[in-house]
Image 1 (cartoon, rainbow, N blue to C red):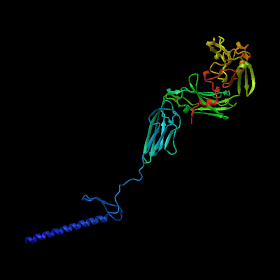
Image 2 (image 1 turned 45 degrees about the vertical axis):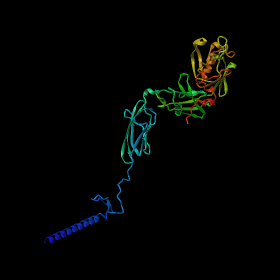
Image 3 (image 1 turned 60 degrees about the vertical axis):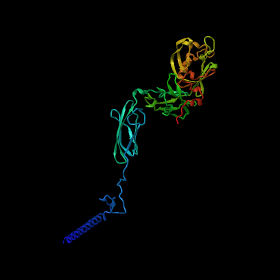
Length: 430
């Protein structure tokens, strides 16, 4: 009985194990059947026994989920950089964006006034549209939208150079002047420009009719530097000239910037040329090639008080230019014994002290003897007549001496040098 009972218990356990295994197999089959079919997706099952993941679709494998529409965010840049100080009021300012577009941007001055500016058609940049002021802080604020659709704020400041850096520059001839056919155009600077080529690019000349000319750089007698424009030949009578120098905010030195733009519109007058042959003791005035006056004259004597040759008393040969004129002028030359000598009808033709002027004391010598200290002497009557016809910029062509007008005689020797030499005094701007 005991043995039989034991066998029955063993058989009963085997039947229970088989029934459990069948139930487990059925459950797995049901799970697999519910996970395939109409959804068409892969389901990964992780083995509780630590086996590698398996898929209900043996022909596929799982992949990480990624977005095919991911885009970069907008990147903002500025030229000059945000926070810059010492910015020229005329310097171009640009805010740009990569991987996006600027949707809104405004620049304001310290008073809150909006500064003109514009967003480019493609939205990739914004540029300031007007000059800024000296010694001010400007603020930009706006928004850009990146390729990822997200907005990125734009903000920054620029500080311009101080008001104490402004220097005044001047131009001659002035507006509405009528001038002579040898007139130079002179732009004088309040500080010596460090980059002459950059400054020269800021200046333009328009003439009617067209005339060939070139700039040269000269140091003036007053110590200032100037751009001086000379034509190859004399200006045609009646030429209309427009000069424009965009010097506002232009950097001359690290501490000097142009205070303003300068312009001039002037006209070349009649063609009047003085022809003065020292040996003839005459001064001839021509207009449009025709002689309109011939005056007895006296020129530099060339000999000092000691009877020895003195080049300082020789009238210089070469083309001089009328620089200014005064009905009365006090002349000084202590070396030769006179100070505050009042002379009438004085027309300056160089910066070495040469004038065409009346001198009653030399009337007896005029037309026959050269007795002056270098000036051209006329009578009171003839001096006044010539004075009334003279224009700033008229040429005075002097000949007959061995001493030529040159740099040592001041800054108005421009017609005393060959054209090629003059052009070589310019600077390349290409």
